Image 1: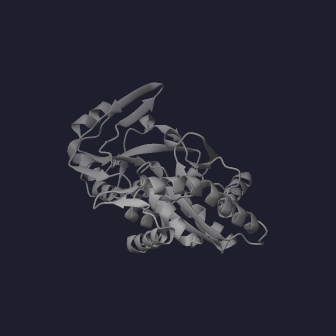
Image 2: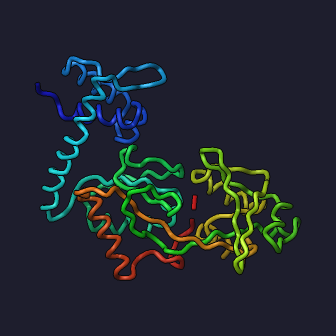
Image 3: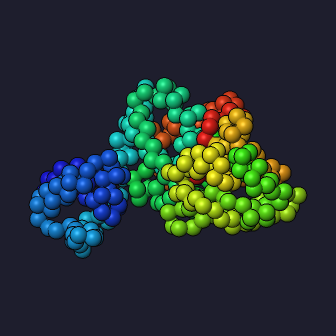
Length: 315
């Protein structure tokens, strides 16, 4: 029996993503195109592969059996094709990275332009979001995360500044009205601009000084989605809405210009920088291997991003 390899890839994408819309986002396709590919695969195979409702897409027994046999086979096909790619003078292909918004703003601008200039036949597909997800189920080759969010059984290499810290600041006008806190607990009496994850969790603000750790859950008039709406939070702080806590590098330009005044600086908490992580597998795709080597070379020659070299803009 002959069947178009592209149709099988569509079946795998839908099965792994759990739906046509999710698979379309992961493959830069469209739900209608994937739906048509699955329909044609079912016609050629003569069996139904998915049970579809308006809410769910689930593999049938036949579909599940096919997927379990396809996964290792397709992996070998991809590995074989990528092995050939190693013989090219210039690696080519697509590299999909899932990164937090903070990395897209603070880390990658110092890496991506130079990398693409060196390897023009590699296409970088950057998915910036703050939700922690299974990046490989979403069709990505690698992810960038901080150590508390790293998945198990992954290879991780440092990328970007190795030490960062959260800063707290507010507009001078706001502080003239509300007063300047001298201890983190005094933030409970201030209007604070908070961030909230898609899960609904609003992370507490953590401070540390001389071994003393202080955790507070301040409140305020504005809550924003972590990642996508952080720039709104910064502008609100500049406008005098309240106190904000964010990456020091993100706030530094506004602090330097006098739009924001740093608060409680001796209490600002340091944390380790992000990591690029990917599965421990026999053959790493050529675009990812090239990117890894590029990052390591930057580190080796001291070109890795430093706190002092970062542009405006953990979210």
